[in-house]
Image (tube, rainbow, N blue to C red; front, side, top):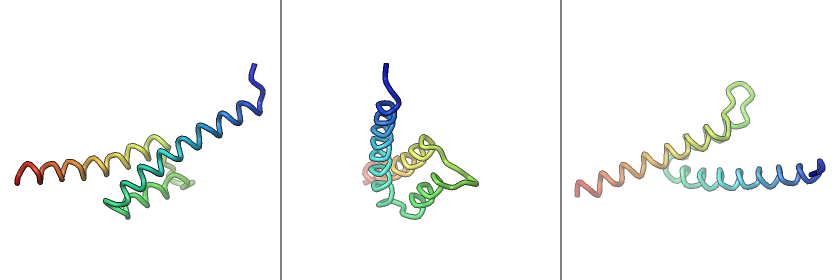
Length: 78
């Protein structure tokens, strides 16, 4: 049976993994639209209008996907 400290370490490991993934998405989205990406990241810690981790990832992916679609349209037109 796992003791409290082992559970704490496992939790910390998972949190680090999530933060790494979020930062990677943020850096990619920041290149496209810095203001939107910054707003999403700031809302993660906002006490009045909080954003969950999943929602933040979804929003960042949305920014990236729309940019990719725009680029694909440009390629198809030319």
